[in-house]
Every structure is written in C-alpha cells, then in structure tokens.
Image (cartoon, rainbow, N blue to C red):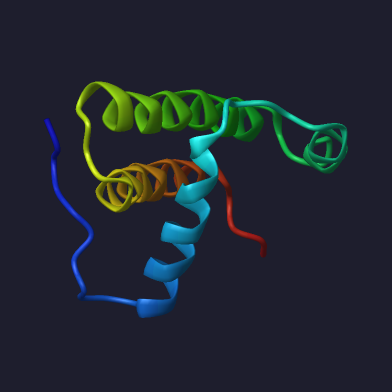
Length: 98
C-alpha cells in the first residue's frame, strides 16, 4: 500500500536530491567507520532515527523490487517519499540554533 507519491510540484532540487539519496538504499544497511566517526557529533536520538531509516528503507527497496516486482524507478520514488518522512521526523527532533 502506497500512501502517496512525489509530485512535480515543489522544489525541483530537493526532489532530485531525495531521488539520488534513495538509490543508495539498494544496498544493505550498514554504518562505515567514516560514517560512524561523523555521527559522533550528533545526538543519540538522531542517530537512532537515522539507523531506523536505513533499516526500513533498504528493506523496503528490496521488498518492492523483489516481492512486488516493481520497476526500479518506481521503487526509488517510493523510497524517496519515505525518506522525506524520516528527514521531517529528524527535523522535528532538532532544536533550532539561536
């Protein structure tokens, strides 16, 4: 069940970046040493949300591609829409700088 889609309204650059980022969820979720080092500066809540996003989105990409047999472009757009939700969630958790 898909809740919605990415429409061509709104910011074209943001849409393009979300699609490019979504392609990375073709691979299994993992945290490299470099990424782990960069994440040390972030609060643990943000790291938990990011890890949850990696697990869910990589599994979602695999499920839609293999089980539902959707074309890769449609799968990527569906994952990009969910990625936007995780980004929104992180944005709600972060307090703005003064």
